[in-house]
Length: 489
Image (cartoon, rainbow, N blue to C red; front, side, top):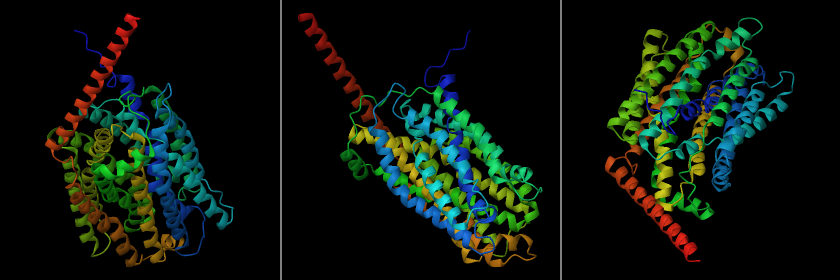
């Protein structure tokens, strides 16, 4: 018996496109969150020999970017919602055009000419980062996926597939520093600029192919044009969105703070000479933990609502970080035997929240339709994107302020026999203590999510379905009346 061919949006073409269209965003986000601060402080040549100055510049740049984000994210999301629907859809054209532009900006950001003055370097870094940040907003992947189906189970499949695929590509990203060192001039100094080009170029092409293969759905084509009043009403009445954004704000720090601080901690706790090897080892461990989390989240979603899954995930990750912080109080954790398993458990717990959080973001779009009759996908997705970028910037900024406070000097520390205890105590706060605290806060905030219980979700979706059926019936009746009028004439 021939195997039944799956229908849209579960067909191979759509699933493949959805799985790879966000790869360029994954790589760019990983480079910005995990390598940009290190590049600016250690390898850009910015304020060389002036202790803490480069870290201050990087932290200030990221904060300025977040101020701009507070303006451009909601604005661009609203613009996308109001844009006319083309033959390719409403959101697909924005994504397709923004991917190559943002990739070029990432490459430029990591290739600042070394012979420029410090002032010009600072201006270039800030300008390129702000433009990149703006273009990056025009990639509403969740908005596109939300148009494909309203079925929660199908949405989970559409989210799990790209999660797994992107993680396999992220495995290569864990070898970024070793690759950069291999491309460097002396086997020790990394050529970060060239490595960025090598990593970004292929995934950009793959992502554009993926977007081209996905046919945007029509679940929102019956909605009226979005108005500024809808935008205001959404913020007043969409309590699930407000709560979910708070959860994203606090919960996201678990990843962003640890991502930025980990490179500095690993570099000096386990030896500068072992940086490439140890980052690769920990990267592989984290990737396999994250891959396992995709399957774990799928199992949990069969038994619990997305909100409960997020609480379990962040709670587990925060407990592990609290343990690491206590261990760090007596000095840097120098045993990989202790460090690696605990980090693996942290990544497993924290990453289990990813897919449930994405589903919650789509629930907030559905809730917009429930209260407004309009989904506002672009605006809702942009708000979540703003929170994600806010965390990335604040995470880097906090680490930058800690480095500035302890007078961090990369040239001095790389050859120093003894690293000041203040560096490890400061990194311990931003690497372990603060993320753990924010994670526990996220768990507490999620308790107030209006769709936390299954009964609450079922009631909202039942009413949405009733309204859809009523609209379809009304449309059919109107069509019938027009036909009768035509016959009479």
